[in-house]
Length: 295
Image (cartoon, rainbow, N blue to C red; front, side):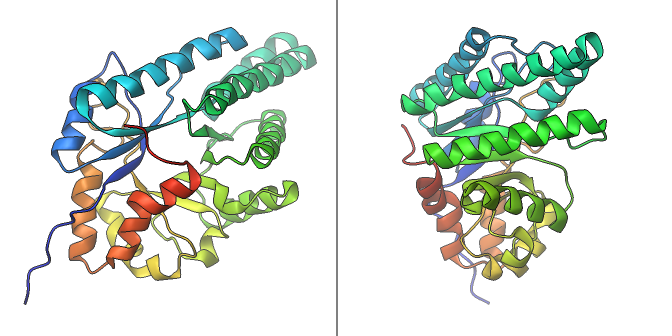
């Protein structure tokens, strides 16, 4: 049997966090040494104390943008930037402010969310960021009011994405078909192409029948390979690969380590996945949804 050659094209990790107090540039170097060429650097908020003003959001986003530039210069990777209000941080803030101030607290929380989106959008318009995310709704049990507020704001954000012509990275609950169907219906309600919704931490089944036209960003653990190879041909426009690398010294390698996407890319090739899908995952789809990588 003829040996399968290793992948020689670009390698993009579509959801990668970095932390100045973590491994930071060392983690980016690990990705590059393993064969990685590009990351999508996703803003990671301070979950214990998220910003409460537009100026605060702008300041934290500016640091993520600065980290991206440091990775480009020091490591030599292409970096796209995704900025936005993580749904977990805001759901906890919603709950706290609701408990404290009732209806007034709910309004305050919603305005803070809108400020965070406005601040992120300014970076996109300046060409310093490429998409908004990770946005979404709680992936754990919350009360009805927090759930409804989260859905209202997510629908507003989709409306904004339609108007601005940009993509959203979503963090939503883990169900397969029901979550995809719900997100697709919301997108259609505001006239947004479902493919502009990139589902972060996506399950490994990527057939269009399941994804309903959304773009899956597959968490590419070892167990994902078989499903991905089996369903890739039925994926209407392609998929991304990601690690959701957290760069948290308390949890080394969480969620997946920085070397994972390059390694899994070669394993997908060895398993018989056509190179066409890898070019889409690592180059074509990113250019379509985010624009050119910045080096």
